[in-house]
Length: 182
Image (cartoon, rainbow, N blue to C red; front, side, top):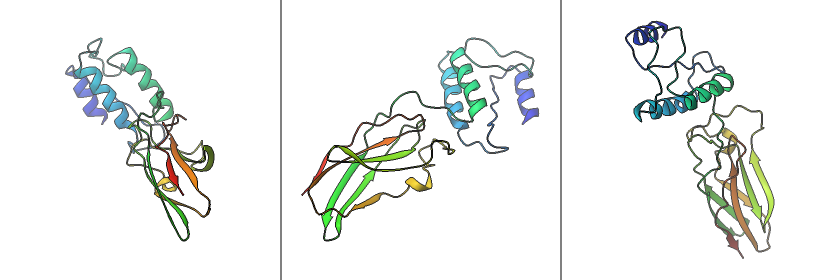
């Protein structure tokens, strides 16, 4: 890696190296940096040509430099915007109670930290991982605790249900459509 990086830089290549501080060889969330790097370079927003000195860190612009610093310290990027899509929720009653099923599609950079179920407008159940637990943020790295897609409410009364989710940055999604179950 060091040889390739040095040789590319010596030839004027627009390359940047980001090392994940949480792993010795894994790349976990480094794709978040790749996306931002290519956006900056390919959109023409790179503010300077790389130095011929491969020992000098190069970032295409100030915005990317700030992300590089954050990633180099934390090994991920915290999303600063709320999730855009509301989860979907369905509910069906049978003899044992109400079965809730859902689908959540978090933002690529946001990940999934917790699911919040509301019954009759009040928080009823929350399923999630500890705030300090490592959270890879890609959509395909949902924490084990959140991979289930069903929940049972044994209540015999009629209720209204909604669902929201929390991302890695602590942002809450818009609520799902309300589901009424008689």
